[in-house]
Image 1 (cartoon, rainbow, N blue to C red):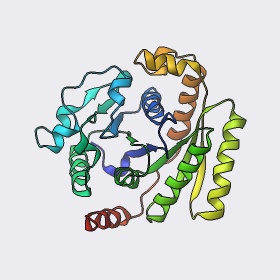
Image 2: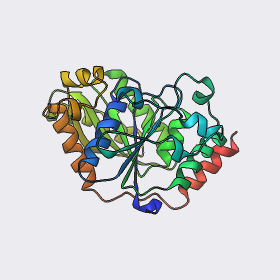
Image 3: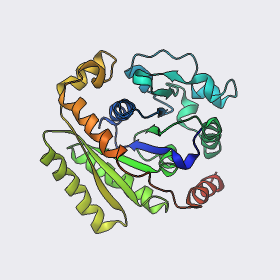
Length: 271
């Protein structure tokens, strides 16, 4: 059994919907599992969960039932492709989309006490800049911000980084460019975001890599499979393998002692 310091907790987020965040969270989890790593994926979009749907998985219970004390975390975990484990969220339940800090902490506490043997705990956050996104990104060792070549995507990613960095816990962000035509295209997008962030924010941005624009991703989604499984030789599948190797070769980032506790206390005091 790991201690929390030995698990790399990665939050996959993005300022807006439609940038491919959930697809990246799923395929990154699978690509890390292919490196013989033990991976758990949390669907943290509590109001509109998609992970189970995108993989064609059937769930009987989810985090809503955990929040209602009807079962424990261990009762809702479902096996996913390549040995990954998935914690499913709910979909279409209004109260799950509007959880307060105490309710978020209840879910976080349940997960932390479960404490399985893992190498990676991947969190697929909701889109936007909600309290839920703040909670889960601040608990992560690494924040992966997904952007694509749209003005709204870059603007919303900047806004997300601004909000999270000004809350005082996270100052470092890893950027993934998605649906780009080439490595150079991805690097140009990153440079645009880095330039404005360096000018206006006290935040450090690191380029983590790119996922190429690939027609096979949409085909895989229609099949309710990961692109790695449906089209293993596709450009995007190779991109996810490359991204997983990049992440796996890095040391686990540390969280500043006391910073998470201070943030959570502040969130709770605002309720």
